[in-house]
Length: 273
Image (cartoon, rainbow, N blue to C red; front, side):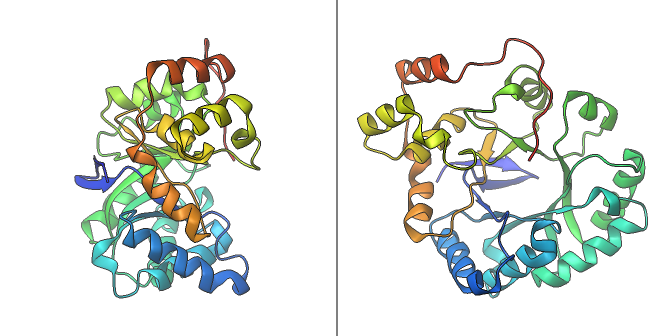
């Protein structure tokens, strides 16, 4: 699988998301098995957060990576209301315990909150110096937020990005690229299935002999600095996700998609879910 450099390490451009995992204990075994299958297929970046299932997703991840920690690039996120000088280390310790690990590879501020960014960065840096995290980054930061952050040590920005939500292409994506800051796209195939039922997307997918989800992921991965973190639990979907980076879209494919999912012509408010 193709990789890009994130936090000084080569990581796969297709990782695994865990939003909505850990919410139903009856689904836990299936979720653990799904993540392990993804690791076997090379999707060794796993993204989670203390918010997901109020720690439940981190517990699922911890069980999935037990005995395989050295194979995984682990990403987690801290709530903004925990992003104070005292709150960050406490939240990180809780996450480390749930994840069953001594270090988080990349620790993100989930979105900007009430605490000054300088205070959060100071707390992140202390965690890094203590060996609790390897690098830190942000999530749901727009251009103005990155400008306020003004921190070369920020390793990544994780935002909503898919064919239906292209607003970041106007200024945020170029700003991240200028900073040589990888962008992690969450909800890369949209939500609720409406995107995947779009007729043009279905036609192009049929022409390429792939699913609409694979085509939507390949469209994102045409950008060298973009990685995706789709969530999947069904084994079939996991295998299909892993194969998506093999698909190369032609200029006529991109043009056809642009006619349906138009690129932004002006600044748009950053979308979040």
